[in-house]
Image (cartoon, rainbow, N blue to C red; front, side):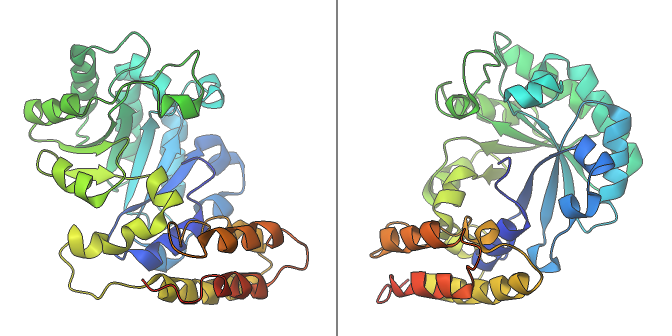
Length: 314
C-alpha cells in the first residue's frame, strides 16, 4: 500500500473500525534514518493499534529504524519481503529478499535485538522460478528460527521481471491451499493470509484455517467494508456506525488539519470510496476530485460533496 495508508488514511479507517490492526505504507530505512523522521513516523493516538511496515535489507539500518520507531507507539514492526516494484528491487529489498532467507533472517534478528516490539514478516508464496512449496517452507523455517512468530503471506508468487506491481497483484495465480498447508506444517506460527480477499464472508472462511486475514486494496476502494469487522470478526457489541457518522467525524479531523496547514487533497483522496455502491456516490467522488486540489479548497468542498449523497442511509 505504498503511498496509500498514510496517517490521514489510517485515521479515517479507524473511524470505521476500532479493532482492526492498521498497517502503515512501506517506509524505507533510508527515509526514516536520513529523511524527515517525524513526518514518516508520526501518528495520532486515535489510530492505535498500528503496525509499521519497513523496507530495507541492511540489518544495521533496519535496527536503527526500529529504534527510531520505538519512540512512537507502534504495536508491531513488519519487514516487507513481498513488494515486487522496480524501485524496491533496485534497493535489494522487498520480494527479492525471499531469494536469500538467511539475509532476511539476519535482518529480523537485528530488528529483534534493537527493540522489544513484535517483529513480523510479510512475503509471497514464491518469487520468479523459486516457487515450490519446499522453497516457501525453507524460507519460513529459516526466518522462524530467529524467534519470529508471525508471517503475513500473500498467496501469490511475485515475478520480478515482466510484470508491473499491479499485474503482480492480479496475474500470478492465487494459491490459498498452499497457505493453509503452511499453517498445518508450522502450527506454532501465526499465519495471516493476504491476496484477493474482498468480503468479510471470505475472511471468515479463511479464519477456519488460519490465524488472520489482511485486506488491503479492497478496504481502500470500499472502506465501509470495515464497518462490520468489529461485530462480525471481533465479536464487538458496539452499534454499527453509519457512513454519515463516519463522514461527520472525519470532517472534524479535516477541519483541525486544515488549521495546521495540511492540504485538503492530502486527506480527501482517502475517502472517495466511502459511499461506494450507494446513490450519489459518483457525484460525491466527482465533486471532491474536481475541487479538493484547488488552492482555496476548504471544508466546504466536503460538505458540498456530502450533499450529493443526501438521503443515503447506512
